[in-house]
Image 1 (spheres, helix red, strand yellow):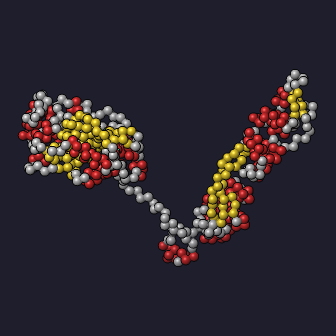
Image 2 (tube, rainbow, N blue to C red):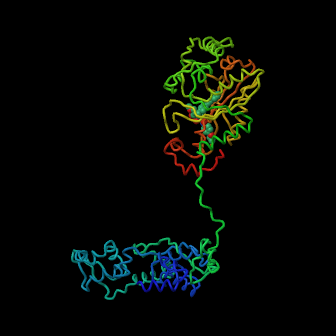
Image 3 (cartoon, rainbow, N blue to C red):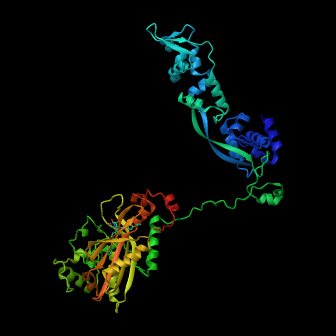
Length: 522
Ligand code: FB9
């Protein structure tokens, strides 16, 4: 063995690695066969090279790593293959002929026949073989003795079936076998048709019988010792994709958030500062004219802080007006909620339940700037609600909010703005449904038909902030503020086809999917 390897190395010099390539011998033989024949398919090659078809396919695959040495056309062929019984018939003779070997000239009782090892050896082909022998008029049934017996009608039984099977083995395409015969063999479960992928191999533009693996890299050593001059280099595949650069990527949620952000900025909105998850009940609820006994203000819906548990500072004059408005409408053509407003309630800190708390702060600040200047604000950030968790709800989500403050805005302006906003998201035929929010009147839920889901989806909520919210801030009476809100999670789940929010957020997020997820176009 050792001597031969040395011979190999000497024989193949620079391309010795090829010699070690699996089935190299087969590669060379295959190429010489093609050289001689010009073309061949894998079946013919396997027969010619006396090796298994898969070895030929392996060789074809490795030769294909050499550019343009061979052309390979994949051909799907319906080929006839032998079943187990078919194999047996080919090797040992057809079931009916083997059956005849145990039927003597004087005939045989059915029971004896069925007890014979040959009959048993025929397995499932046993019973049909009697039928076949009968059909071939080799035997006949004789019940004269009461018991079923088989009488032999012929001496010689030529094995046509085995001949046909041998023919089929030579040409598994079945082209040289009569269709009716093929159907009969199939019915007798001796053969079955299989779709086989075969390969037609022809000479390539760089056909050669001596494979020389081109150099993949031009190395410094080659340059230094000039050996590059005598080397073959594999052609550079300039179209090859580079190695994917592992890079950071935006989480789908942040991609959608960016999409919404761009739309607001294009519409001339200014982003509100939202980096304050911990808010006081005053700004989160009271400033929004949400009564202190409102169900959303209890721990079932809201995460109250234990530290810092309370906030002390609210603009005193404003607080007074908020108190009065809650208690009796504050003189703003409202009767308020007719209850005793507690400062202690307003002091309670919580995780904000909506970014509308930020809108309240911004509108209050705006109201302090005289004269009033119309504004368009937006916010996109996390809000927290102690809600029952389900496939589409976590205890936090990203709220998107748009706010427009201007003189004498109408509900029509709100609807128009919603059309303008959602159209930029590719969402058209909006439907509005009256709704209720403690801080807006009128309020509307917004719906739209979603082709992908083939259903009408609630895509947001909206309304006109109540005077009981705006007037205590000091905004002029004829200033109206329209606003709307939606989440980032819902459109992201719909866009990326997430049915469970936990696949989108949390420890189970499949980052690869996130990485490969394209920048959205909602
Ligand atoms: O996002 C929501 N739905 C939605 C949005 C876009 C979308 O895009 C698809 C590509 C087409 C699909 C769906 N919703 C709001 C509607 C529902 O999902 C709702 O069941 C869940 N809502 C959240 C609150 O759940 C308790 C979404 C969240 C929401 C609801 C209301 C507001 C904000 C977020 C608001 C408000 C508001 C109202 C008036 C004034 C100021 C703010």
